[in-house]
Amino acid sequence: MTISQGGQDTELHGTLETGSRHFNVAVGGTFDHLHVGHKLLLTMTAFLLEPSHASNSHQRRLIVGITGDELLKNKKYIEYLGSWNDRQEAAADFISTITDFRYSSQTKPTTESRSVELLPGQRAIQTQVFADLRVEYVELTDPFGPTVTDESISALIISAETRSGGEAVNTKRQEAGWKALEVFEVDVLDAGGASAKDECFQDKISSTEIRRLKAEKANA
Image 1 (cartoon, one colour):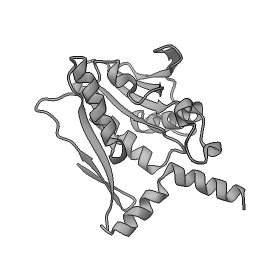
Image 2 (cartoon, rainbow, N blue to C red):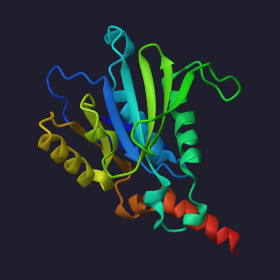
Image 3 (cartoon, rainbow, N blue to C red):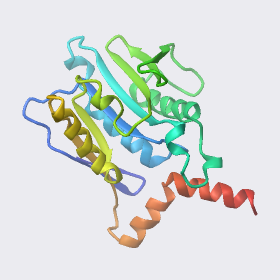
């Protein structure tokens, strides 16, 4: 599947198994300084969920793993890296715009959110958007997160940079005797096809580059 946005094509690589239906899908990342690349990743994750009319009141869950602060201590320009709370709120604001069309910057719909602790020291926020749709924001304290503790998750969205992580997750699940996740990779491709332009676009949507520019501006 290919989606075009702002002169860029986004491709979703992966083959849905015959009759495959996904009610619990996951995605993970740092989601620092939420940019267009993050938004495409989150949008594709929402696309994989079964639509409401086909769910027959089956609870649908969109699970967003957000890297915890402790795992990011060695990131470049860490002084400009958002806290977990800031990154979670930015992701939640965007997901609200693509899952709930009652949402606007002026009028936010009433939703039920609650903080929970899935594992000792692991933060999570669960938001019930509709009766059959819950979005869960989980702090990642290791590379795997809920994909190896929640057997009901059936699909995982990754980027090219996290391809090896998807393979590692399925190895862990198979060791536990669980069904492997269907893994879908999102690629952002320049419509013009020029590698130089691809690299330029990737730089523009890099969280590290955003932090570098903030540092550069602060030190000017």
